[in-house]
Amino acid sequence: MAAIPINLIVEQRADFEATFTISGANNVALDLSNFSAEAKIKKNYTSSTSTNFAVVFLDRTKGQLKLTLDSFNTSMLKEGRYVYDIVITNSVGGAKRRVVEGQVTVTPGVT
Image (cartoon, rainbow, N blue to C red):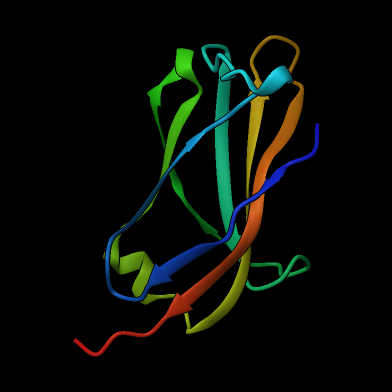
């Protein structure tokens, strides 16, 4: 199954969070009980540097997780377009799957 494309907007110097429900076959929520997850933001796909989102599982059995960046980390991002993805890893066997991907627009602030 291909990763679902979802674009995000991150405001500089503000806390960021986005909640996702990961679905499996037939659009049924995927039970994430045996999974870990990681998510990164990069300026482009080949960039050697990245910023890690914090990943929090809200309800593993319902496939719900949340990505966050605190205001310090958003202040370190320059205005512009970036790319990101979320990869889950099954602890039974180690299979990895990219479940969400997209563009991130970082917007500047005044205050």
